[in-house]
Amino acid sequence: MMTGTMSPSRHVILSGCSGGGKSTLLAELAGRGFGAVAEPGRRIVAEELLGDGGALPWVDLAGFARRALDLAARDRDLAPKGPWTFFDRGLVDAAVALQHATGQAVRITLAPFPRYHHSVFLTPPWPEIYAGDHERRHDMAEAIAEYDRLLIAYGELGYAPIVLPKIPVKERADFVLNHLGQC
Image 1 (spheres, one colour):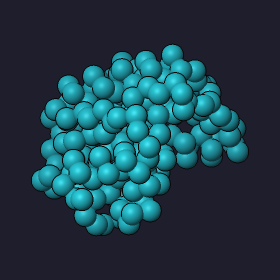
Image 2: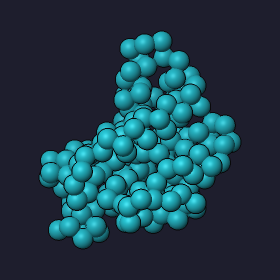
Image 3: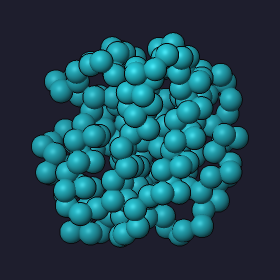
């Protein structure tokens, strides 16, 4: 089981289905003055598209997941200080991707890292707002399969997954902050 240096951690994960509104929610929370860390995967894909593309998730999922783990660990080390810092995905998401690609157990991958806040907010599949783009090339079925893997993994790791309602972003941010006791 992962151990943490903060109890409870002030680092909160936004996870869930691709295209479910995580980045939009992160921007809303940042606009309210909270620390915000962008998704490692999106940053890696943007960089890889400018280079040789060897670690793109649709080319080498294991290589991509390893890079995402490294970047998510660095993000934790450099995270803004404050009452709450929100992460668009993080170490657990990368570990789940690595397990999917290689079979390496999530618990083993995460053993050296501190835990995030026990509440994890997941965006559910939301076909009405889902859109593929240059950096998100998988379809809705693949996004739902990933969501299912994440929901199971967070629960098995002892986190409290909270599925966000399909409501406008300002209301979603209020929902998150109310849950965290900050409104």
